[in-house]
Length: 247
Image 1 (cartoon, helix red, strand yellow):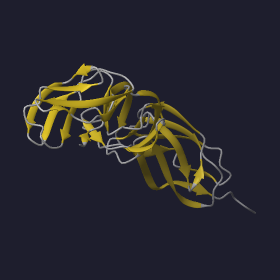
Image 2: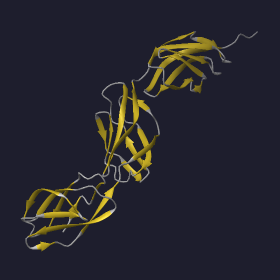
Image 3: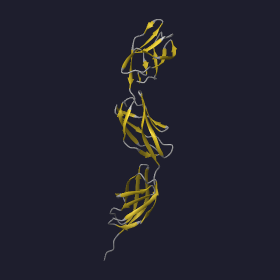
Image 4: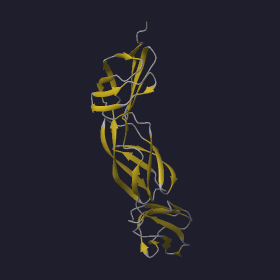
């Protein structure tokens, strides 16, 4: 006599279906000593809403013909989230986030605001999820749902991709060390800036401006790449290294 699912929230409310034979006219389904609420019944199945409970209990079905053999049902506590590996990412989604906590082994859904994704369970304390696309840039709540219930104690910020429109000044010596201002949009979450493939020290002024110090480079035009939580922007040949004079 199978039971599905065989686990549910300690708070009760799990819809459980028990299948077997001679189940018509069921008068009671007990989870340990507590009765469940029967919602449907046929000769081969009983659907019932589980009561609250804890641990492992034995489930039995009672009809006019007697009481069935017992089946095990496992009560699972609500999950607890302790950390997100990152709190922001591109509005387009597609990046992976690791969620750590307790009671995550039965995780079956992670919602980022109104949009959901199915997680990969690594262990009872760790799940991975690919972030779904967001409806718009902004902060949403993160809700993890397991057999034991839901927990929504965290938030996640969707960030639109950056743009970069100009550099001032746009040229300097190959020795580097030039202070440059980059103008664009969605620059507040900048994580790195490279000039000609070399990392440049940077500072965020505001969402539309960055300050950088150029690294040394070879004479000629160099691409400038700005990487943020929302993605990357490239100014192709945006900065020109100028060789020093020689006599």
